[in-house]
Length: 204
Image (cartoon, rainbow, N blue to C red; front, side, top):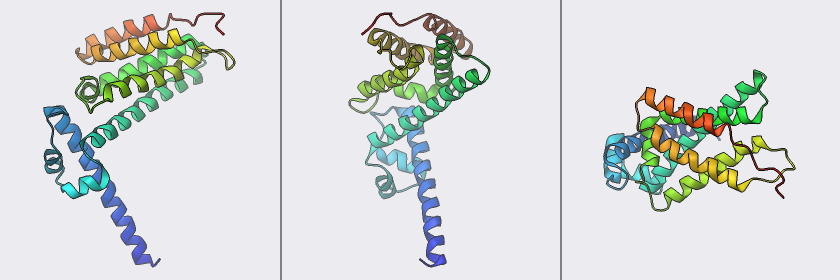
């Protein structure tokens, strides 16, 4: 490959990444403004200053845009919770209950910080089957954090997993509909209660 060809590929890659970002930003704006079900691809590309062809180059359609936005949000939430737990461990915290409190609170704080984005995913207005995926992903997140409760050779307490994931699902939907002070006060109460939960002993 010639140096000029390599430079052209780099420029093309940068343009492609910029176009993808513009389409996602536009989709987020349109979905928040009119809702997913009422949004059209034409509105997204118009807001992004892109073409329909460029959208379909990067995404398969409106639902794919929505899911890409959700995956980006989930990654930011993972980063927040991992950072919060890592900081707590670095400060000497090793109690699993307190670590679960830290992870849950970081997740809720992220939802409050990105209130409008969170409402987009917890409003019930998403692609077909998304509500089920949302529950599954929150359960996966909870499973990773409930693992803080147990030793490697201990079984998963499915009842605890369902209680925590269900509580978080309801909690997110409530905190993002309150003002900042009310949201953080509610988040305090929810995570304080969650921190009291323990797995049942003697499970096989």
